[in-house]
Image (cartoon, rainbow, N blue to C red):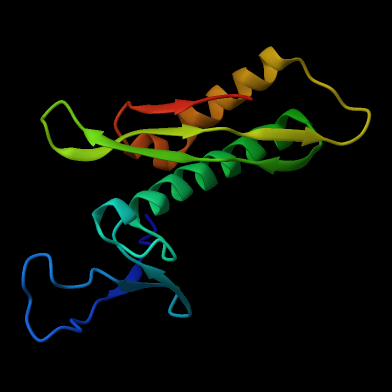
Length: 149
C-alpha cells in the first residue's frame, strides 16, 4: 500500500518550555513544497489565522467525501458541475471522558449541468454511499454526521 507523509516542524521561541507559556504554532509541509501554518484551536490559545488540527481533520473528511462522491457520480453518469461543502468539527468529551472531535458535520451542496436533475432521495443515497466508501470516514469513529442541504 502507498505510504503518504507530511513533515512537521515546531521550534520553541521562548526561553523555556513552561506550561501555558509557549506557542503551539508549527508548520506542516506537504510533498516537500507546500507549507501550512498550524496552531492549536483558538479556544486552546492558538492563533485563529492559522489552521488547527481539528479543522484539518474536517477538511480531510470533506475532501475525501467529495472525491468519493464525484467518483460515484461519474460512474452513474451524473454531470456534476460544482460541489461545495461546509464542514464543522465539534469538540467535546468522548465516552471515555477525553477531549476529542466528537462529531463532524458535512453540508455538501451539489449542482449539475443545466437540464440534468435527480431526485433528492437519490442524491441522499449517493451521499450515504460516498460516506461509506470514504477512506477518512472509515478511519474515524461512528460520530460523523452528513447533513444534506
